[in-house]
Amino acid sequence: MRFVCMAQMAAVTLALSLPAIPALAQTPAGGDETAIVQLGKAWQDAWNSRDAHALASLLAEDADFVTVLGPNGWLKGRARFESVHAGMFPRFFSKSVWTTKDVQVRFLRPDIAIAHVLWASTGDEVRHVKHRSPREGIFTWVLEKRNGQWLIVASQNTEVMPVLPGQ
Image (cartoon, rainbow, N blue to C red; front, top):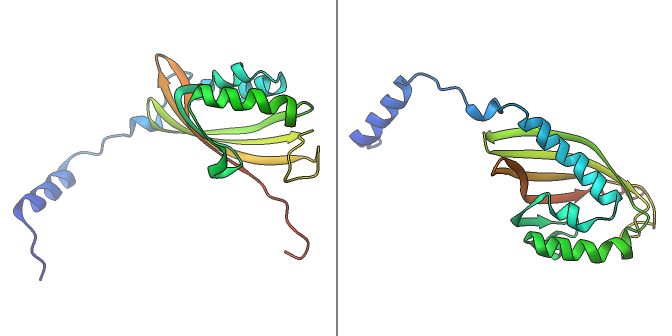
């Protein structure tokens, strides 16, 4: 027989007796979902313009951004993100064409959301694929609404790896 303290029983009883409260996070205010989806379009436009500053402006000042390089590509802060991308555009992405294919949004709270962003690119000159071969991947963005603006506060970028023959 398990010992259950009276306070725990009272808490469970109270929780079970309360009416269900609808989750506010499931009903985003006004155009919040549209604004987040538009971030995917803004990302595409900034990338295709090779504008590291415009790209970085989509991130919060204190953002954590993990590139497809994983821990070796963990960029802490908007300034670091901008600096790294300003250097990468002419070196690896001068002929890159980015397409944001889909943005799916899930609200955790009215001011916090997760977006999964499917992307594709061509023309990249990165070391892990044949130069200019098409690439695809998915971002997981954690977004926060700050001063009325949705900003990326954390991002994880995962690239679809090519399937090797025989696998």
